[in-house]
Length: 213
Image (cartoon, rainbow, N blue to C red; front, top):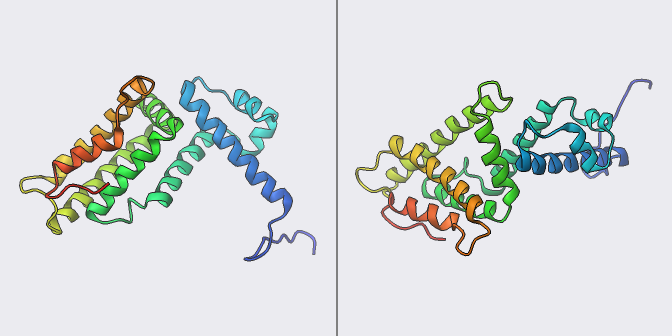
């Protein structure tokens, strides 16, 4: 019938055009992530991203109609992949803290991820930046999740006496951000910052027993 479209069901191969489109979309996201990390959002251009992908500017706009839409997709994919791999939001207490250290360790193996976060979060302090609200909301959620994890650790008897989760949650976030900047500055030196070890050492000062690597 005219106008009726079908979507692949479980066990069926998607149409070739669909699969090709998804691969192209992922390539664009990878390229945009790299360029945003290199020069920041404001200095990156859709034409440069299209050129790096070997496609036309209109071809890129077919997938992402605006630069803001592309940035949003890059950030959403970053969060989705991180949560899928490490499940920080789903984990409880010290398990969530351990997953946090694992994320930092994984980031150390992917410099582009750290560059992207540091460059964009610094740019996004400007109220007119397209990612301003994203990062503002992200910090609120991250602090809330950390505070919850620390409270759960306290309920399980794993938090030292006198440690206030509401006070220390933003401190842990600050430690993570500071470690990333230090790591970017000295990663090519003789003694690069060991981000996961440093974060684990800080978390251990809050807990009754050290986190196991």
